[in-house]
Length: 119
Image (cartoon, rainbow, N blue to C red; front, side, top):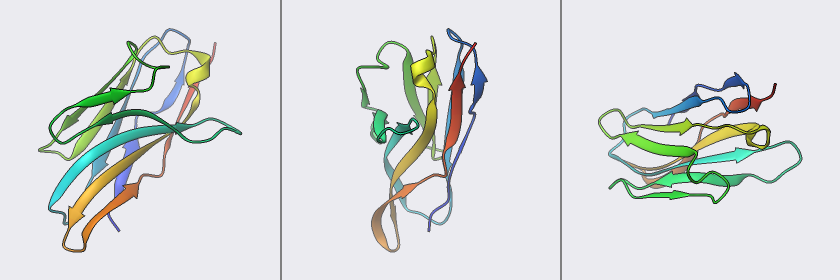
């Protein structure tokens, strides 16, 4: 098991900002793609943003222009800068990491961090 730990969630007012972090640790060879997903109550988990090892990014239409994904390869860490937050962004946010190690290659999930956007 590879530890994947998210942080940075919390309560914010509409229009506000939050920055989520996700760190991948352990004895690994390489971290490939890093993705942020979210799951709102009674809804399916959805892809929010993704970034490849080379820095190419993809965003869900609902967050384009408001969220920015970035990564620090030296720290095996991915960030999600969330601006102009809306109540509909309220959800548990999860990090998914495509990791290579001595076992081969596999996907690992973090435990999630809660984001609540409310006045």
